[in-house]
Length: 138
Ligand SMILES: [Zn+2]
Image (cartoon, rainbow, N blue to C red):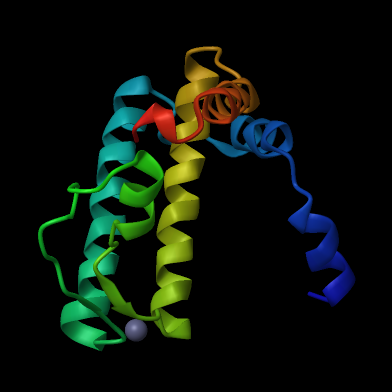
């Protein structure tokens, strides 16, 4: 795949992705299969993160209590830790990208089964974030 093709694909829209899922999904079309596949890929994503720590070792998790004892939400935000040390190696990153992609596939399939537009959901969440900012408290 040449660089130009990758660049064009980087502009892939949610609508195009969702339409493509609609076109190719055959075997797991039942909503029962879709929601259990979503569960499966949530587990596979979590498993891939853990294997990056316990098998590969490219990342480590050093978890401690979060510090909420600050004056403002801004200060709290700036002092929250994700507890990840290091960076994913190319191999672990590729695995996680595949698992996340499969998750997005089944999330799109769920949207198709229930006549929900993925872009609308994304846009609603985006507007909510823009309106509430750090006060969304997520
Ligand atoms: Zn790794």
